[in-house]
Amino acid sequence: MSSGAPAVRLRSIDFLRGVAALAVAFGHALTAAPYSFAGPVFEQVCLFVMWIAVNGVPLFFVVSGFCIHLGQVRHGGYFRFAAFWRRRLWRLYPTYFVVLTASIGLLVLMWATGNGTELLGRYPEPSLRWIGADFLSHAFMLHGLQPLFDQGAANPPLWTLAREEYLYLMYPLLLLARPRMTWFAQTAALAALSLVLQYGFTRFTTDLNTRWLLTSSAPALWIQWQLGVVAADAYRGDIRLPALWQQFRWVPILLVLGYLFKPGTIVLGFAFFIVVNVCTRLEVEGRWPSTGLVGVISRVGLWSYSLYLVHFPVQTITLAMTRRIVPEVGLAGFIGRAILLTAVSCVAGRLLFEVVERHFVTLPRQATTLLRA
Image (cartoon, rainbow, N blue to C red):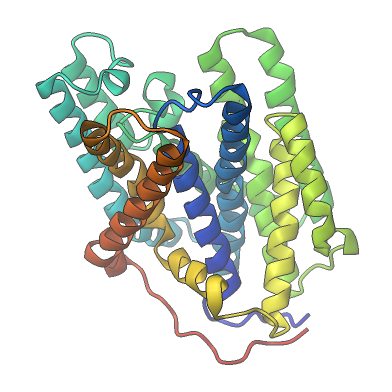
């Protein structure tokens, strides 16, 4: 493959972003209300679908490693800490802060009106003071270090934003190790670190909060981000991957292993590593479709960040409103409501993008042709 990646936005990566954001939004739409009313079989089906949906998160991490590393190489390869963080903060933080402020505002409104006991129940008394502390923790991206706040702010998906920031801080360590270690040795070392944290240290504690922080910590998830970095190097032609990591038929097997051996961070990372390799390869070869459903989801990928940030509080509000109109629903109503919550999330995500996010992002013009291998 050519060593020079085309300096355009990749449709295949936008497609994967769109898939990940839509999956997470639909998964949370399913969990928004009790799903045990239709019996244990339906409940297990819902749990399985939700597990598949939340795998949008590891896909996001792999794609993030790919995009950040590819962008870094395009900026000359030499890591400039201040310039890197200026770009990241300008790109991500304004939209994040708007959503965070709105989410905390929703919490305060719930507290003032005596609603939202499930979301408010996580805070000790006096609740308002702890809500303020939660806001500050999220504003400075410190919530990933505190179990009480990690999935708070009335917007639990924001836990991944903290991990993303920590992975950015750890990125220079990957760059320092590159001249001294092969990509394979580096990946193996991070896989071993993930195993130790997720299957080793967790054996010494029964506290759920501690186990959560270990299994979802940035060092434990580092392997997924590293695989995105490796995929970017392979895309540029800087390294040559074994055929195994470019064959989609292995993805279902890895997903099954991830389901059987939870949390499955490593195998899920490799599954989406293959997905990124296959999708970008198809685009480089000029075989990536740009119309139909793929094209629609790719366009969602352009504003997937806004969708991901806003979908949970929007679903919280929408669910409360629909429950006032229809308190109880059957199977058809449950599925219809999940689709409705997902659709409303998409509308809110697109609106947030148009009003806020698009002012902080540059969308390069798509090239009509791509470099071929």
